[in-house]
Length: 464
Ligand SMILES: Cc1cc2nc3c(=O)[nH]c(=O)nc-3n(C[C@H](O)[C@H](O)[C@H](O)COP(=O)(O)OP(=O)(O)OC[C@H]3O[C@@H](n4cnc5c(N)ncnc54)[C@H](O)[C@@H]3O)c2cc1C
Image 1 (cartoon, rainbow, N blue to C red):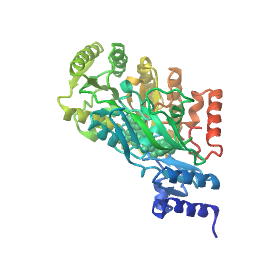
Image 2: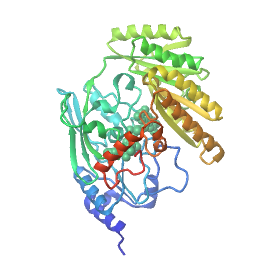
Image 3: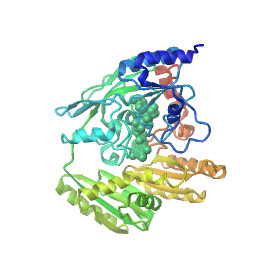
Image 4: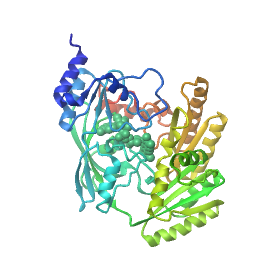
């Protein structure tokens, strides 16, 4: 007998073709988790169907069907988010946008690129850089994450300190609403104030308001030269203080990254590039721009760090060494997840002058609850990733982990920061939203959700 669910799936097959619809149990299991290693305990929740549409017309029809049959929809790119943002709800349709993977137009006169959501971020970098152009947002996952996921999470990365985040590069969006309506927001121009800024509303909406099908992104000229410096510290506080001192010195590096001893050791064991495993912390800086300006800035950074008891300063000798250092930094997460079965990645951001306080307090919280904690961060913009290593089957330890998470997030808010900088809220951070978002603001957000998705079909259980 045909159930509504089977009828729905049959109609989905008619829209995208049987090849792009999967209901095999082993495949559904593959979509029951994402890169948020902290939340896989218990029986996996399975979607009813995985669908891979080819274009906006198909996505629009799929949303009309989902509306008619009241089927929840989880948009998905590469599933690399760290906040449980693509965890399915029972019986939902996972809508993967990876087949929309074309770079449609690179416009050198207007410094823009039009892309589909399934383009891999690193691929976009290579294509625009070959033309002497630059798309700065650079999540460490750039070799596998998609532009659609980056838009939905407002992804950042090391270059945020100087160049901002995904939101700062989006001029226009094409998106499908919950009822299947296709909209185009924003303008092709740098300026544009006609109506509400729906583009900015949709960026960072974590698949809860619309499904992106195209974006017009802003580009800038590729910087001429780079200089990468590794600063090694015996004292974690001195390293964290150097961050504020460098910025206060009027220098805004392209990247200003921090790693503590736990992370240095993990990354070295993983990448073998000669990091100082006995150091308490390192800062990794990238200066970019005109070679003469970089040389001046490098001298100034050296002076500031020496004034704060840096033990060693190394400059990358050539491009190969520079790439090695940055590849090592990008390896921080894969390196640390090998230590214990689960990692909870906290993603707090504080005003830059509070970065040292955040580091010291997070370290103290880890010690208080006897947890293995590693810290790395985009220190230049105040973003600290606190990695709590644990085993979710150890209930006693998990109780301490939960308490530590709460205190870390509370600390960020007390320091006038935020509980989620670039990894999204997803399912993992949703219970903590009240720490930061006031009731009346939450009600405003709920009204927006209600207006755009009255049946609550888009990515339920996340964020809102
Ligand atoms: C090793 C590692 C390093 C990382 N480093 C960084 C980092 O430095 N900076 C950073 O910001 N993040 C980082 N991340 C997190 C993650 O890669 C980013 O959040 C990325 O933007 C997710 O892209 P994705 O394609 O995997 O999206 P997914 O994980 O598949 O989805 C993420 C969210 O986007 C929604 N979504 C996906 N596609 C669409 C679409 N077409 N329309 C509407 N909604 C959509 C989903 O519903 C979900 O809510 C890292 C992750 C890993 C595993």
